[in-house]
Image (cartoon, rainbow, N blue to C red; front, side):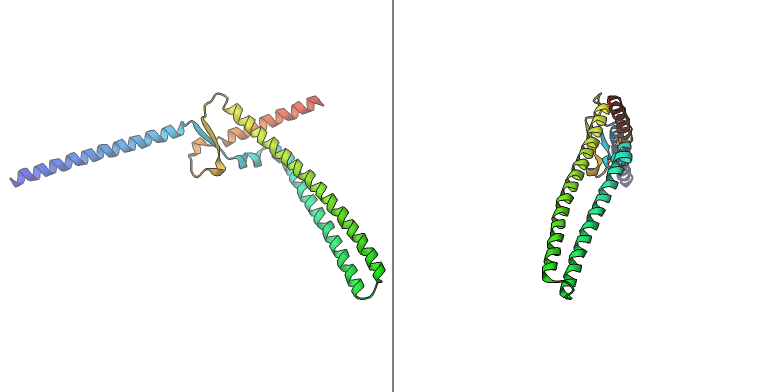
Length: 198
């Protein structure tokens, strides 16, 4: 009786192990199938910051604009500091009794006029720079959108997302290099077209 019971338990154990093994195999197969579906997915992502930084438009026009921004900011800061220093020196001279009240007031008014002119000029320069930056960013966004439209003209991808909001994804879904190549191609075509117009 014990032998029969032991054999029944062994048989039951073998069946359950085999079922578990089949379930495990089925789970592994399902996982493999899911992974293969991800690799051949309708979805893709683009690292837009990488496209932006590595594109020819940024290397030529973007870096020049960045340099212009930095020079303008530095120049404005130097002019502002110079005017502040003049005002401090004027106050020191007046407090030491080295200039008269009338002369101090006249010089202060002169400095205030130059400060007002500086502020007006600075605002104009900063607005112009802001507009240039916006135009550049719009051109970059337009190039990227046109590139993605051409890449996905056949509708191969149901969704292409910006990788900046991506938490995790397979590298197989990354089409950044394809988009970068297309952006550079479109930029070169635009440059040639504008040269032809001239």
